[in-house]
Length: 113
Length: 117
Image (spheres, rainbow over the protein chains, first blue to last red):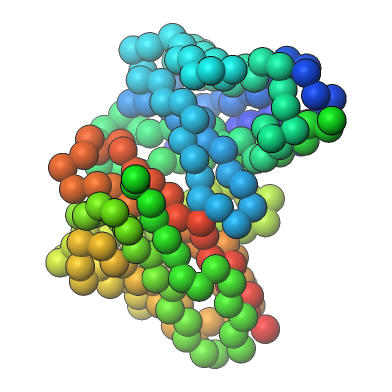
């Protein structure tokens, strides 16, 4: 059974710091991996999607890496801002189509100004 | 584009009553919608997958007679929690896959906080 773990559960940093959020999954047979942002009262926003054949994806200040064989992904946030404060969720999609995502519990990030 | 709404955003109901949660795709048609549940400090867990015009597929351990899902149109899916109990209190989130989109494309609603007293 696929399990997704995110470390740390919570993180507080001052504005401007670079930070790394970690995600690990127990079954390396995944189709892709997604990082989401969850804000209170709002839906999940997809940040980055990495296909199993890819090593990383970048969008602005965000960079996500994937090491499928070791079951790990990281989300790197550069020059953090207070607006980055949110819960970040990692989710994997099993290695066959039509199925929904398996989520980690998330990392709650707080960036202080 | 690709906005999914949920109604209500919060609901409080008494134990034993039923409550309906709506999930709408506002600017696209969705053949498939997903319902997730998130308990405090826990992961989002898939409850069921609904396809327009057919019966929903429930995940193991989810009672289909308790959580009724209706996907009667390409823009609306409803989740009815029947005979709700305090242990059903949770955050319910839906997502919708646009018709014709890749199987991994989906958009999430803002969620509904259900509290059963």
